[in-house]
Image (cartoon, rainbow, N blue to C red; front, side, top):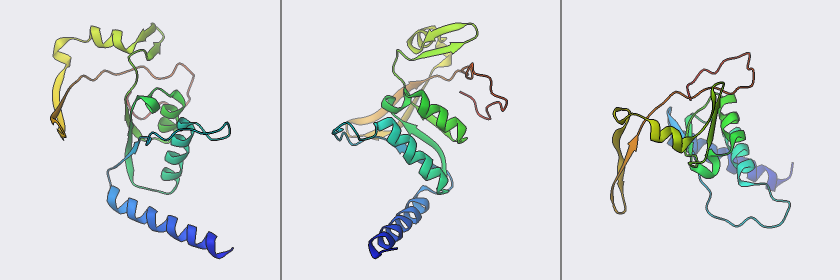
Length: 158
């Protein structure tokens, strides 16, 4: 092994230890791009990169209890399936056109939101932002699992 490979491995190990220390036992991995422009035809998509990064973090035993991301990643069912396969909890945004399938039919997320009863909603703050308090309305609903047969039922709820 040459010295540049050893140096890169040592740097990776230092960064891994630093991140693990900062994450703590209930750490959160956040997938969010920096807005870089994808160049050429051979670079991986952002979704592929996010899946690879999360896979590497979990394989490296980083103490991540769950993953969060915006709709750019949340709408990617490959990404959500990977998180379920890795048994990592997640909260992801999805576009309002996202469809939910069940044995009873198919619905768009915005339709389900409109049909949620008023008492299902709770207003919560997620802290102060640059322009003051960031307050959002939240509702929780149990969503169906994939229609694909899975001999091992999921351990978490959707």
